Length: 338
Image (cartoon, rainbow, N blue to C red; front, side, top):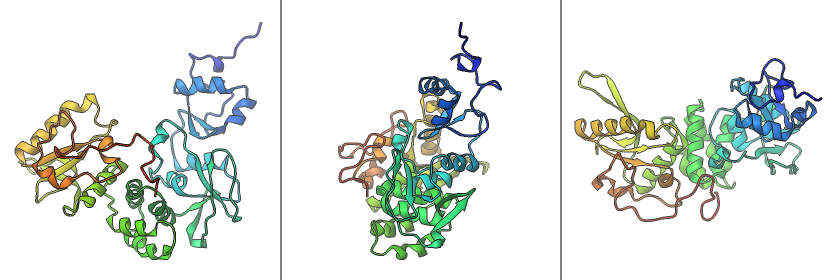
């Protein structure tokens, strides 16, 4: 009678007797050759024992995320003659620029051929791109666009709310803002340069997440002054107590983004207490926004926010906000992505 090996049983953890590599990424084809077919891999993913790193590439859950891991995963599927660009290059550089749909659907890889031809492979988003030598860096044998070139490309090619988030992310990752500003004119005549020229000066490494960047861009679009990021308020003893995502200290108006990851039901009481303290003891007016507010195709009329009465128990936008169709995660805005 055939006995199923321990590693193939749903209820057991991956251990030393597993045929799968436990210290490096592996491809679906490699797993197939070891007898770990797609249905079993799906169960292992469901149980959190392995996780999909890229399309067709997996890694054991105990392996820590790192630059080396990401580079090694891409080397399994990216040809030697190719250059990793755009969102995938940002991922290697540690910048969150993946589409919001990535939480449900593994995104395509952004890869171009250095031979000047379009790559036609399943799971790859390709095209033709002109580079100068300084645009390319090599990390662990993998060729990809530099932080500067990737920031410029994403600032030109993404929907403007995601584009500013990418710019902010690269500034947090160490890109010099003055270097970015100086590079903009190089792309004169290229697709999206007008957008890049407008967004590059707005870059702010204080924005801690893509939605905060989008919220700040709505503020700029409303033309109500220059918002500050990560504003600390102190208690009576001078100790930093609470921080506001985006705000105007002089007007005492702040805008908070409540994402599901850090502002769920378990955090509701803390959020209520924090906002109540800021309003009652430091005279702030705090308005709360969520993803259905910030990812819309037009600006929120923030000019009236100072007159609104926010409720920390029920995340709202301004009382006078016009009704508009919000975008689901990853949905393309009207007119397409710029």
